[in-house]
Length: 289
Image (cartoon, rainbow, N blue to C red; front, side, top):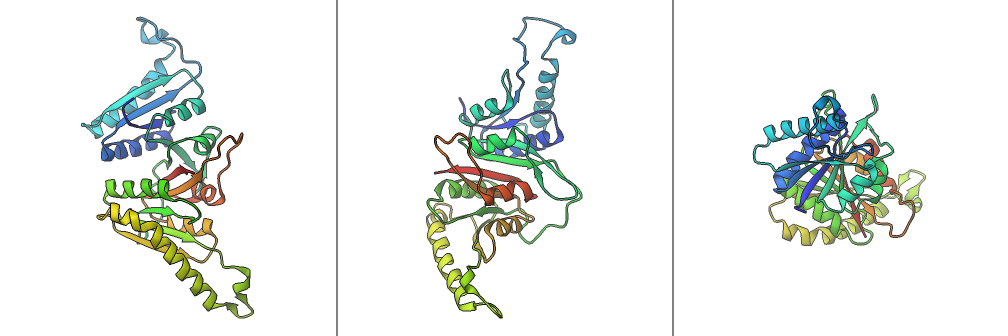
């Protein structure tokens, strides 16, 4: 199958926002855009029947309408529609194994800027073998952009390999011609707390050590992507809070998810969980070993 960006369509405003985001990304990466609509009750394709008796009419219309809009916005983009007689979770996980990434819509809960992940999105995020991007419907009432508007923010734990995460983040920043901001949060250890506050010597030692480790992790990717402007940020607070704050005004937040081989119920870590529920921008969850 030709390399593609696959988006799950269900007709909601969130899924249409995801489709528009996916079309932009597919065009940047010179990939095919695949519009996937899964419905277990999809009937076998009849030979020739009028629309009023075609059981698949609304499913076809949903995909056709989205495809027409996206082809009008992106005349040179290859867009294919795909109707699958399967439950959405299984169909999306299968599509993930055949795609460069999966893009899904997420609902924002008002007035709190948050994600609501339903019965389908969460298992796909937790199990997919390729990156999953979560996109909210456009919100015209969001606050003013920050100084990092439009940048790609990547959250780094610095435990184990970051290669899959950095590959996706740098490739995305390069395709978009945007700066990349690497963020690492480190909670202040208990022994650094003193009666008058925090021991500056201890926190400075933590900052210097973390900066060295960040530089080492980013070094090979800076060489591979010399045109990507890279900055790093170290926050001495909970990693989850640091990442969510860093994502304010960003164009995309990239977080990791460790692959859990042969585990019946994969779980998301606290940083990834916080990111997909509280970040306002699109969030890419990248699986890694």
